[in-house]
Image (cartoon, rainbow over all chains, first blue to last red; front, side, top):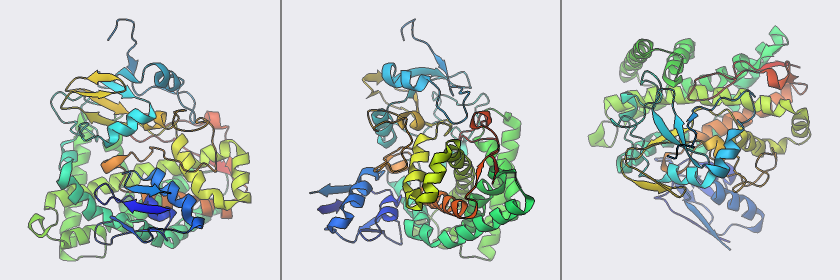
Length: 64
Length: 403
């Protein structure tokens, strides 16, 4: 699995971080998404797919 | 509009406190861009399909400029939060909006909210102690649902929680679309404005570690911060937003779970379902309020119809969240549903800034309630509970419980 993010689309809602704090974080100074792990392990695939599906800005893309 | 086409009064009344009006399913199926008449008498178009609502909320052509001369007024007196001039002080679109959003948004990151969990749990425990001391039956809304989010947002903004009665009244006058007259709304807004202005003056003298002090410390627009009026309106907006929304949702969430007590029992047996349960109650909240209005300064197409310039559109996220084309068995409550891309917090660049705060509060309240009051049940039949009428944000009048 390969994860990419689009900072311009990110609205800083933080739903990805609530779901998968090992994969996503937010910048301290503006709340924009930081990708911590672009190729997360299999045990995290489901939760990363969920984060992409519920992102309000559609800022997370997952390719498998 | 054809002569046969019915114009619905909006909001659509519903007799059942927790269930949706029957019209939603018909509108989604047959009339996804319906003609509606608002409490003001003005006309608007109502969207009820998931794809349409999601598209409009993220589409910059559908603006929040409800103060435009030909935009529909929502309430009879033209007041209310969406038509207010005050609402226009926070930049509404484009880069300026993004700048505001990022300045304020950093206070609502998931990490910051997670760090507030122990404090939220302590507050919830204390409020439940008081409920237990007074004995059953109790009103869960007054005892827990309302005070918890108010304490949390007051603390974040550095405003004294003792003044919560005032905030509660001010926020009600701003969010209620039918209950108050124009004079009363204006007087309340003026008093709220004065209060926040005095509060900010005090923070300038003696800064704290709160959000408003930090916004002041960030400097004016030339230093990359906000101007004084923007800080003031931001404070008012956050106080109101942090007030009625989650406060009402706690009561509705608990009622939905207790209305069929097998749901509560399932959570007692498996608290790992708390997170997905919170999302599912947000999705199925049939009483979420007015929906989000948008104004079209240009012609645009939605749901197969071309809407003329000057149209006001109302997005019913609650109706969209029950659209079978977006959710399997959409009308069923599935405590394990995942992913659950509901629109309760909106979508796109304007989606709820405080959604991590709301989610965390709802999760913590549910955790603490399950632990402290496992025998919790509704003290009246669910069908007998009453909705609060006229609010931009929907809620129940009281949530009578025993344990």
